[in-house]
Amino acid sequence: MGVSNEKIINKMMEEIQMAKDTVQHQPKMMSHISKVKLLSELLLDEDEGEQRMSPDVHSTNAVQSEQVISNNSPNHRIEELDGTSIFDF
Image 1: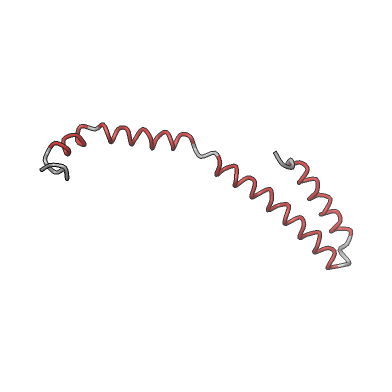
Image 2: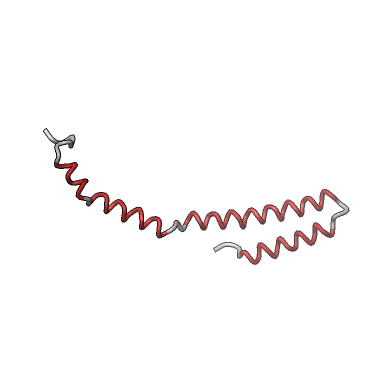
């Protein structure tokens, strides 16, 4: 695992304090604010990545159950036996 969220947030707080201390010097202040933005994006991207890595188990199981039910349904078997199959000669 990489850097903990707590360490990132602590670094953000340090950068915010430095930005407050350099309010009179615009370029330095903007540099610190830019670092805070970058650290924020890092946290947000990490959160999005975790959400993509763990899909909703219930929705996956529901789709799988639906596929099994539809493949085993009596209507599906009737359609196969009524002569509409491409394999009927």
